[in-house]
Image (cartoon, rainbow, N blue to C red; front, side, top):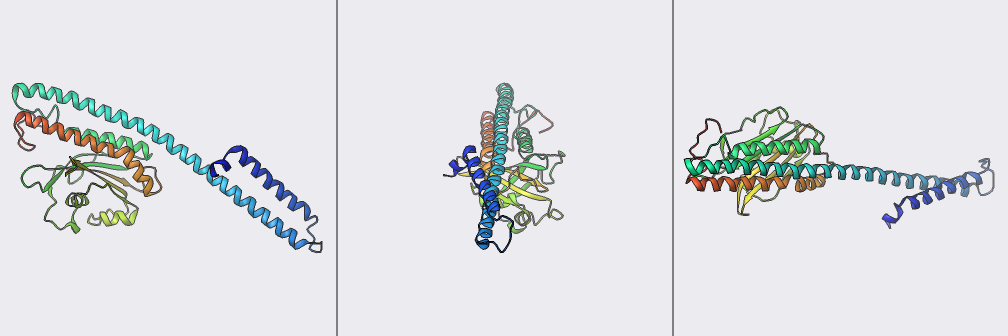
Length: 306
């Protein structure tokens, strides 16, 4: 029924009928004299006609605005989806080429040249791709992207931020620092440590000043700066959390969305696929290490820079 009423011909007929009704209501009032016969009934009819006309016009106006916004969102999402496909294709092609070169060297030197390929180098590139995509989606550059990985050695109770991207290319203070997430006071810990401790496969989303301040309460001077947080866990074989992709929106930036439901939809469509890419390079690294007999933190390199 709603779809039928929204059709242009139906809409035009309804508006025409209402306009005619208002015109008739004005006509039967004549000179608007309060002494005329049935004046009270006429004025009530006139009032109801005006109210009904305004209500219907208001509804149609709101529907048109929503339709235009939906069309804009859909067109924007189509563009972002195209960029997503191109982005992931580019990431896979580049990594495949670099890893092939690494494999050729490993076959003769038994060493991984981190100048050619490394998990950290690849993570940084992926974060930059994500940042560029969400900057277009949200029509703003005020975002921060980071990737934190589990250090898979020893007790596996430490994590490290290995990739990031932001507007000013400013390196986060915790970048490259190994941090413990087990047996610590989580009430005073960074939120990523809490998520690793929780090890939930669910995407974590916080929106608005109140929710964000609860998450970043331990950071001095940041109240009101952040407005959106998205944490996407990366799981290996659905059993162990090996990484966390973080997206933070600054100064009221929310990926062009107006509700948490929209943010969840955008996250599932355009951000969660990158978690699969991080898992892919995680597996790639494991395969390279298996070829050299090394571990993540015992790799011999020919490089001076990771």
